[in-house]
Length: 199
Image (cartoon, rainbow, N blue to C red):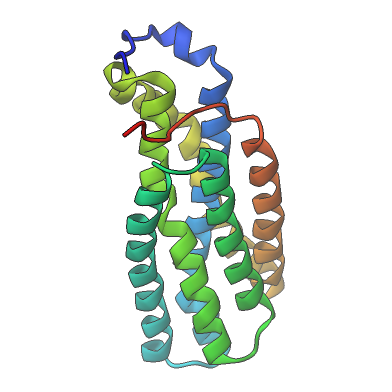
């Protein structure tokens, strides 16, 4: 396929895909950051040892690496919206399990599901930006996305901490994160990008 000419800043800022990606990736990073930072405190708050909590955090990271590999393959073969939805489903299922369970094993399973879905977001972000705006504009577009995404991204961790300080529980924070998954999934419907490989 032909290489897209570099876009001017005003051109890519005027594209709907730019703002959809900012919203979706920003929301997912917000949730992921808040979940990861507060995962160990959430477990120790439930009475588990720091070692047991750290083991779950390590398993989450390991499944995140697996997710990067799997979604790196899927993004070349699937409609990008379906790939993002699948990542959201894995994260959502993991969050629900972690929120509702009182079992260490079930929490571990939920954390692994969450980690697997989380791992797919970074490679998909790069692939979608490249497909939507072209390689020649990749760096500038990704750089322009960072500030508005950061506004969303950086709210997750302090929000969860604030909720805990006010209520003595993370429950409301993680219920809010679950709601944000549905909002992100709805926003994804407007994304119009083809990442499928022609090879």
